[in-house]
Length: 136
Image 1 (cartoon, rainbow, N blue to C red):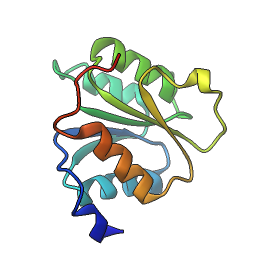
Image 2 (cartoon, rainbow, N blue to C red):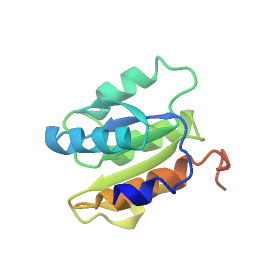
Image 3 (spheres, rainbow, N blue to C red):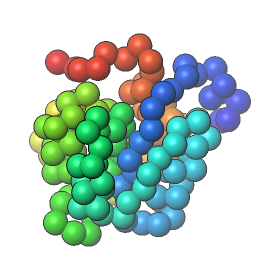
Image 4 (cartoon, rainbow, N blue to C red):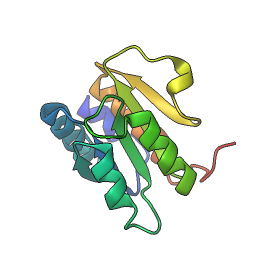
């Protein structure tokens, strides 16, 4: 697993991780750290959005679980992020089967349980330096 990651293109930027399960949140943060990506983690989208609003340039990557405590669910949070920062790469995860219409435009959906390799490859594909800023 790890040995293959050395062949991957370098990723740049940082990530916001929104996951209410502490063990899964720590796992995502640790996986991102393994590929040299720093992250800030939150257990609710409400807290994450409040933080992001203080960042004029937003964040290069958002990984959000769909079912979260608080007012905002993952898909709603991602839609708000995309409306303000359209270039933000987004990943939506869920342990529940989601209707495809819930997944916001240009967002990658990863069903739980996802594998470490699935998450790493998705992040790398989204954050490669030559990635176009906007998808149409």
